[in-house]
Image 1 (cartoon, rainbow, N blue to C red):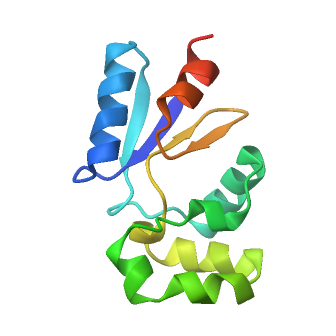
Image 2 (cartoon, one colour):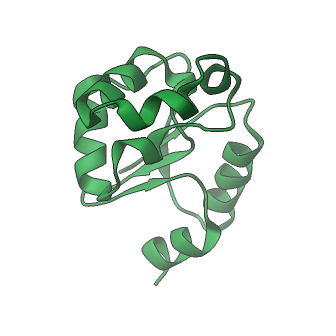
Length: 118
């Protein structure tokens, strides 16, 4: 079953949840704030997604901005980025949709349609 990692107060997450329901795609939901992704999960998801670790950051979040990560990330290793992400789910871009052989980061309707409906 697909895993849907989201934050209930996030508008984009609610939009993605609505899209999943509308398209009758069953998922196992998990709140990113109460069940923070582990370092092991993030490492696996990064590998499955084919994306660099920096793409997993919620760049519009208050925590990202208050930690001034825009200026710090370029000097960090991928491992250090993943460790930082595993420390607080609010740093992680959401929603995440995790399948057996893929991970979608953020909700881009066209990308989700291509992966799940075609």
